[in-house]
Image 1 (cartoon, rainbow, N blue to C red):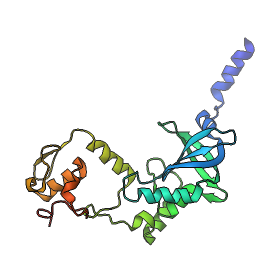
Image 2: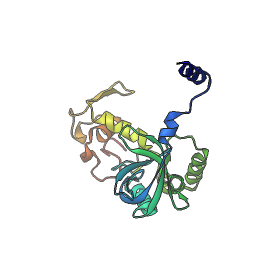
Image 3: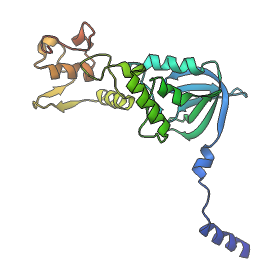
Length: 227
């Protein structure tokens, strides 16, 4: 009992190790057998266990988003059917292993940024090197940085976290007020002849999925009101 009290006293004054970091600091090694998108893949370990890996500190375009398929191809070229090591830093809410990934001497996370195939994931990034690489890629117009920023042109450049937020909003009953105080409600209008402004037409195209409003696929809906 005397020794137990002594241990408790010592434990109170001596800082304990950061167990979260200890739990997450492990390395997974194996062959890449599947590429989900630009930042997620499946690793097959030597004991035939499949593990879903998510690149840490980077975010790439979603499926269906401009540059999404190209980003996936860049990751595939870097690691598919190759041996990699994934240094785990966390587990995300989907149960994926979040990791810094290396293919021999190549830092895959950094290389995705360098090639302009990914954004630095600001919410989770801490490596200044990634921000520097992103700035260089942007200045050189590499990869996704060659896409225009303007929403009047399709495809255009949209950070994935914004794209996901927009997609989530579009999947819910939506009603917004524009600067002209007009109310737009998905399902109410269906054709260009019903649109009273370009802002309204853009809303129905972007948030309500009315692709018919952009018949020529140039990203500008209803040319009769969006001139």
